[in-house]
Image (cartoon, rainbow, N blue to C red):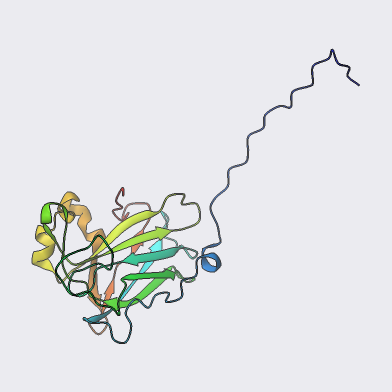
Length: 199
């Protein structure tokens, strides 16, 4: 029992245990259209974009969420700051969200984007912006998907040229299947780590 002259005892400080983010992505980040980015009336070449996400040990990441953001077939984003004199496709907003499955696979049904201008109006090769969210990832991981059959556009792309040549392959999606499927596997760590951008 203490009296008015006895100072209260200080409670010792204890570190809070570290915690990871999730796993809550599959049920707390639903998006109505999900992986269906292109609708029935969307203009452009229909494609499927797919890939497998793995950790540093090559094991599938089964609770990740992948988001994509892209320009339409004419090379214009559905965004107020894109005021290019190019058609705006009312049937396409360019955004999609998909969860990985038990094999770490993701898949989007979209259209092949057109080329867009970058800084100083340098033309960028057709590409899709990718964001990856997963358990333990406190800051989104941002990367890009380029198309292997856009050889000349890729060669002069100002962003792709910032990446060391030997690592560019981690951003290049190859055509597979019937020719309408592009595959890009993403590794978050390790020897074949995908190039991520600090955005």
